[in-house]
Image (cartoon, rainbow, N blue to C red; front, side):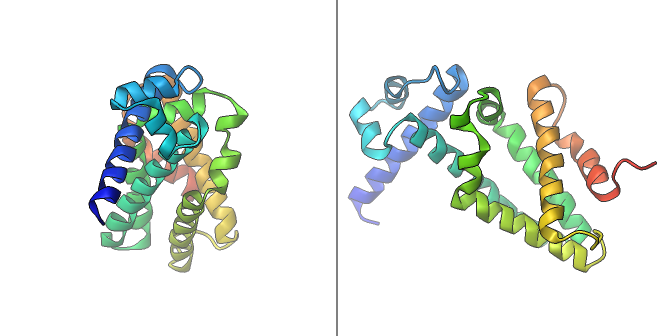
Length: 196
């Protein structure tokens, strides 16, 4: 990477950090490109050189967060022995990541706006990679008999994500206790349902 490209990447990174701070502080709708530029110590025009508009900046930040999560999972999960332990590590690592980045993810659930809806986010390539990674993990668990084969791995992944999202959203709304401590509940619901 030449110096010009390194400088460009550094400016982009500075803008994303500033955007995360401003979005967390003001919420998506009250955040402005001008405030983000000021926090990054750049002119507004510099932000527009990297991002088309505020929505583009928000989704770039969201994708960056998911990319970091996926990278962390890909590094840590294979070290676990057994598919049950890998699934447990997946839940714990994901919850830890959401807890560490709660200010940003709180924006995602608080705005209640089609702009920030899951439609665009779920169609992004990084979201598809995350889903594929999770589906492979669940398929491996099915192959090892940890998860029932009564459902396709895709259906099981959808159920898994629904449980995970419900727990995270509820935690973000209340903001009490440790999110990681809820990993056992998520695994119990997913693996055993609500039966006695």
